[in-house]
Image (cartoon, rainbow, N blue to C red; front, side, top):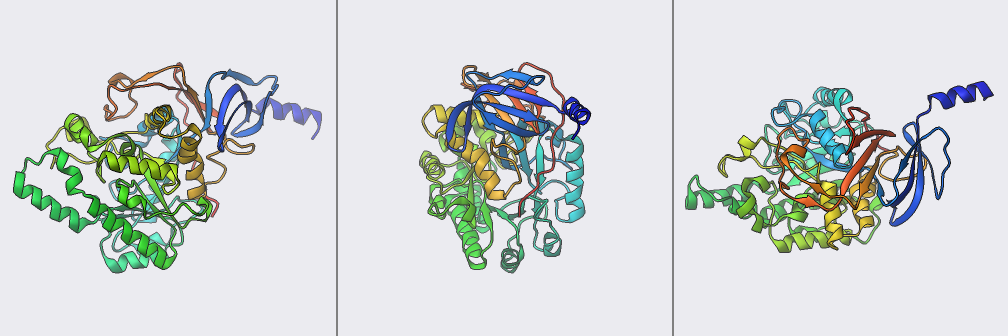
Length: 456
């Protein structure tokens, strides 16, 4: 390339150097500089001189790979009175989540390729973060499921428990066909529907329409979860299916999973969610329906066993199951209030708090929220701070606090289960594909999200 061409290339290249950050990545912490050129990490070194580049002083701050959330419900299309892809992806980047995988129980349910493409089209125009969308399975859409491109779609979602619309897959023959024929990752929601319904009838007989919310983990019980999760594991072992079980909520379930082989070789993996690592059934008296999730938040012993499974690698990733509802919806009685809550803005901060409390190391937290998600889903060029990888990065200030207030929330629903919490860290900046898309002290409106690709 001639000198004039070199000058032209330099003039159009966007360059940023992050100086003196404590990089938390791949099991180590080190102080170094990171050079971003356009959308990728160009260089990592003890000291980098980059004349003309935008320079960010990051001394005393943590630099981590952007978190990848493998389970969110952003409610678009069809449920946009609760949330939409623009509002929730902005909340995600404000919380250090740079990539998300969204679930198919929108309206209409994502049960054919045309509806799946519609969601990608919406995200291409509105998402602040990188995105992928699960294809949904029902009792009668196997042909559509098998059209899904594993290189362009994160996975297939099967609700083996309560869901909305036509997404409860409870036909044994259908489950067998899905597990034996789908060549890509299958993610499952596991709660045994018959057990849940039987438990609900017991509590209706006892309380009528005034069931207390602290009965939720007894209705959506350990037995319901374990029956369904163990069935999914059995099917996956039978057919050698690539299975990923979402939001493990009981200690008993954690023993279904293996930690004796590397993650890249596992055929069966599992996810823990922030709310099951943070709250317990003791919190229902204060939080009520605002911590009503499916599967339910259960006992302190369950929470401790889930933490153990995260730390010893029987559980592979940490995610949110971000699922906003309006204040009006959540303020109804137990039977009427929907399950789910918003979490993406504070998930990383909550796990940093857990790290400060000694429940998980910072390197393990980064592994579970970034590295392992990339490995589990075979995501191309994301999830690590590596030269040549996409520059999805988060700058965290460990010396500034974050107060969760109504005014600070980016969610459309306007509430958080962490209301009133003061976290001991602050998200100072978030980069998506090399562009600074969020800063705590700047007003930025830049949609830099891209469709994720998968090396399958």
